[in-house]
Amino acid sequence: MRDKARAQTTVGEDLLFLTDDQLRRGIEAMFFAYRAFTADPDMILADLDYGRAHHRALHFINREPGLTVTSLLAVLGVTKQSLNRVLRTLIEDDLVQSRVGIRDRRERQLHLTEKGVSLERRLSEAQRVRMRTAYRNAGPQAVAGFRQVLEAMMDPETRSQYQAMKDLPEER
Image 1: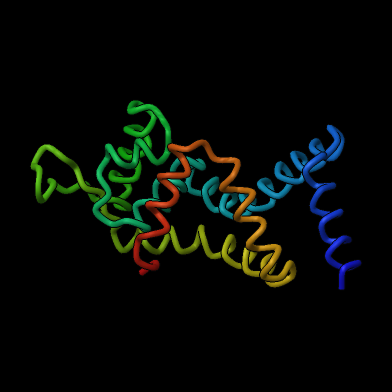
Image 2: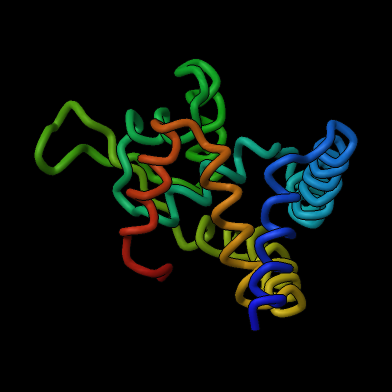
């Protein structure tokens, strides 16, 4: 029993002292994983003449119907000008509705239309399949560790935004 605990400690300690080459491999794995993760939605987006910014906007508006433009700006970390271009296209194409705020009439609350919900579902389905398969293959401990690593990579403000998103109700 002690040998097993000692072996686990050694493995854990080895992870604390990664070489530059091991870190580089981790970075490369993230690049390739991200490329694979975005490949399927990218094909759908290209057919519609949209980019990843459109996908991210659809994702977060779907995640939190009524999200304000200001909140979406903060979540996406883009300029107002950039977001306005994306939202203008999504609104013109009847994927997103911009409504006057309930509490503050100066605010614009964003909602997906039926067409927007359908597109968002198409875009995210392939990603869900990929994540589900990877999670099942890796197992629960690896999934928990993966989430821990991702959260540890976030700066405090980003982590706070992520934590707030985790508290939202499940997807509709």
